[in-house]
Image (tube, rainbow, N blue to C red):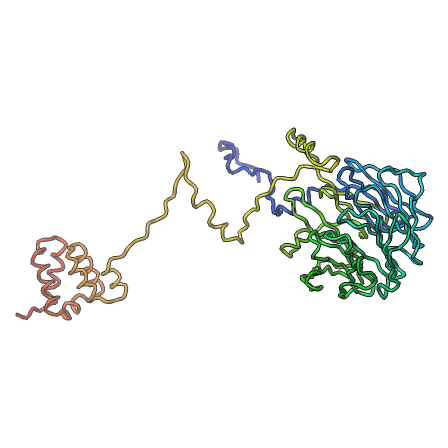
Length: 489
């Protein structure tokens, strides 16, 4: 149908307040916004090698990442991470690289059970190992340096032969060994951040043992996870221990005798690795878990709740976070190492703070906190703007005042006709009395009400009629009363 052109058409510009801003409302929590600010890239291309272990150097002066990659250990350092000369650890598959507390040495296990010590502060592709530790007859899947107390001479190892060894590294001799520390493969181990003599191991026999290097060959504490244990990790206080096995992550109170505190079942497949991440915007620490389902979960162990989930395109075997918490590394089963990092601070003031802080640390600006948007399901959604003051030019709609009903009106609503008439007469308001009497006439109840009045109430009516007989509004009522009411003198 053609448009009617006989009438003029006047286009009108839309009011600015009605034009949509184009901004999408943010439904993310502040923590979700923080984790989404990480930009993910790939450090290594895909291949057939598994990235089974990742670790960051604890030395803040020169943050360095080590990754077990086939028969070598890949090293990355700098801002952003850039590759260093790789360390050819052996002719066999390498496992569990571990930095010494000062970051100068790197210990690496391999498939034949040999542990080698390398220089990490000055890596070279041609330099050989400084020390070689041989005690295991199978894969050495756990190699850990102590992290507390500045212990630089000891190291503990464990592997698929169920052997646990505590080493004196300079002499290349074990301080003690436990041939049957567990009844199955040992794939998990962690040193305590509170005491350099304490460390924990987890095994495929579903148990976790807590060891003290001062007491030797018997575990100080033992409890069961219930699934094949893939990873164990002490939380920063040293009194809590996180264990991963199956699709479950559990948190234990080791000071309280191995009491289970909480169990997290957020993954749908096996949880392969645990890591601690420091949030650079708040300084809080989160427990991260990576699974073969391709997810990394962030867990607030203080509030005992899951805070965020991150999805990766491949199944994950390893996980690590930089000491400053601004670089997140995940290793996959196809040789790909995913790096997530945050944007660097750009203001001059932040640059000055970076110079005053710890040198060489990855330091990016945290995102501004996002105020959560009120949803219609929230009660405060319907109360917003009630205390806002009107500006000049605003059209104000005032709230209607509540109507207060008189006593005779309330009695009329309850059909108490006589009481309504007596209440109006007692107030001695001619307009109210006439209105009540007219309403009673309309209801055909006036004559009956007057017939039921007692002496005092009838005196009030006659007194009212005597004083207001000349009112025009009463003339019809008086005539009505003369016709229908018989006064008895």
